[in-house]
Length: 487
Image: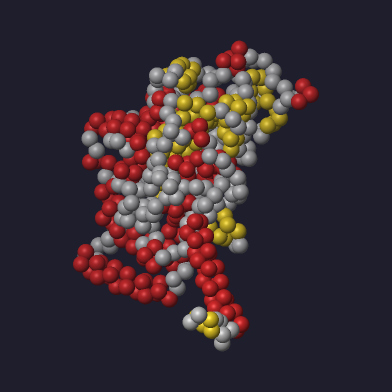
């Protein structure tokens, strides 16, 4: 070994050995840093409490989300997107390329058709909204409309899960699952992500819309309705509280011992967390769902006791959503409409008799959803709650040939946002003069998801999860933040 100025120099073998260890340590540090950037890497504390609150990538504008999803593809031309040109062209033919008739999802289209409802300017911003939704229309000063949304599909099932997951195929995590995985929850006694089905039933794709996909099991959504009690939540009659507590403690010790031997098994961690949450919810869930504790004024605001049973049912779900949000639930999806049998169409799929169908659906949505925004604002929750309203896609400016309704149209439609981080009383993008396709500031669902994550303090390109050798994310390989939306 050589020596110089009192320092020992390494021989070749020791040098290479040291270099290999140093290089390995550097590689490990880089991998760990990459995992942290992606939101991966489960610490011991995270394994013990996988839904503990976690910091976002940068300061968030909002910390919780309520997503109102109208099932069946609401017509933008009869609700939010005013087209004077469509009124003046009412009854005239609309032709496609080379003057040929336009053929869409259900076949050939008939003449252009103006909306059966009058549009009026609302709020201080003067935004035109249809008389179909007057109470929501009165709240336009709190909303930011995106009129140039587009979809990849004109079919309900794929359209639902595209809006919910960013993919038209099943098997991918929903938006709420990604947010729960990234941020955890502020209330360990309630789920991080709750899906509230419509009183009429579930959307066409059902639980796929609130699935965790390949994310850890603890991030999946929990279905919970104000109109149906949670099954099997009550303690069995022969089990007293003291005996139940001892059993739960023993089970916790066994679970933790088992988890120590399988520290990277996220499914195991998810099952343990789910069982523990079920025990906690025996106390917390009945209190959260106790709508009887609300004041008569609040119940009247939502329409909880309305004689219209569907409206009252949706009102109870909206009120439950507010109670969950104020108790720390991170993400709540409210479904309005369902693919179910019943008298008339049970969702917004207005192919044949749009006026008759929408006049049934409009009142069910309007007062309860508007009350949710008003109530959140009155309680100071709207400042840090993001409210989003979506549907699968839009509708044609024509009526279908031989019918009084509009066919599917993914080329251009409307969504809106309100609350924390949103530039209020504004509109982004536009469809053409007939409302047929997005013509200005065209955006897609990936852009929408990227914007929602940005408002929550998350960079969509950094929120990833490695699955089957691919770094998956909510926005796939697409998505740009819609900066015009941000306050």
